[in-house]
Length: 288
Image 1: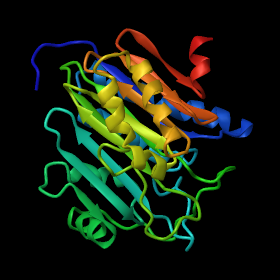
Image 2 (image 1 turned 60 degrees about the vertical axis):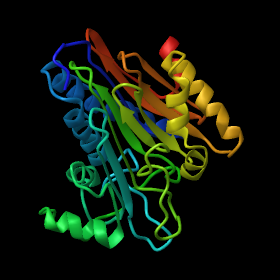
Image 3 (image 1 turned 30 degrees about the vertical axis):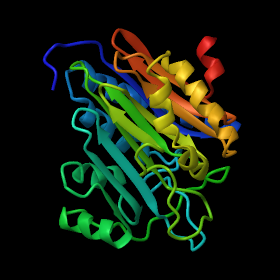
Image 4 (image 1 turned 45 degrees about the vertical axis):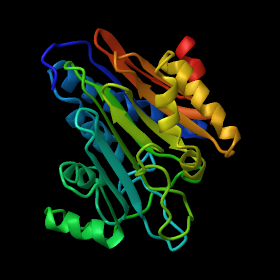
C-alpha cells in the first residue's frame, strides 16, 4: 500500500438500461445514498477495497436495482441466481461467485474469497463456501418488480487516498434467462478489472456481448493513451462486433473519472475529493 496520500475518487452505477419515468427518482436517490456513504469512508482514509464492497452492499439492498436478494429478477424457473465479483487493484486478488441463491449480499461472499487460492466459485460450491463462512440462507423472499426486464448490474470503482484502486460488481442476471446462465459480471477482463497501475473499470449491459469482446480489458488498453471518457467511448464502439448495449464506469491510475454508455440510460453516481456527489441517468446530463 502506498504511503503518500493523494486525491480520492469514486464512481458507481445502477445499470445500463431503460429507466421508466416512475423509476427515475429511485435510481437517482439510490446512487446518491451509496455515493455519499462511499465518499464519507474515503474522506476518512478508508481503503478502496472496503469502500467498493460497502457501496455495492447499499445498492444490493435497494430494490430499484437488479442485484441482491430483494432486487434481483428471476430466471426461467422462477429462481433468483446472483453473480458478484470484487478485485483489489494493489494485489490483483479476485473474489467471484456465480449462480448463488438465498444470500442477501452476494458481494460479501465474493469478498471473503479475495485472499483464497480459488478466485471463482459457482452454484453449490459457492453456497457451500458461504455456509462455511457463516452466511445464513434467507428463504421465502419475494422477487423484485421491475418495469423492464433485468439486463443490468450494480458496480463501483474507487481510488483511495493512497492511490489504490478497487472494483466490485453484482447482478441478478437476466429475467427469464436459462437456469445456470452466467454473464460478464464474475468474469475478470469482461465485466470488471482493477489494477492500481492501469485503471479500474466496471461494466453493465448485455453480458454475452460484453464477454465476447472482453470490454473491461479493451478499456484498459485504450486508457493508456487517452482520457478515461475517451477510452470508454472507444471501447464501446467494439460492441459493433458483438451487438448489444453496455455502459462502463472507470477511474484511471491518477484518479481521473470516466464513464459512458450505448444504452438509453445509465444510472451513475460520481464523487471525488473536494467535489460534491452527483447522480445522473445518462451521460448527456453531466454537461447540463
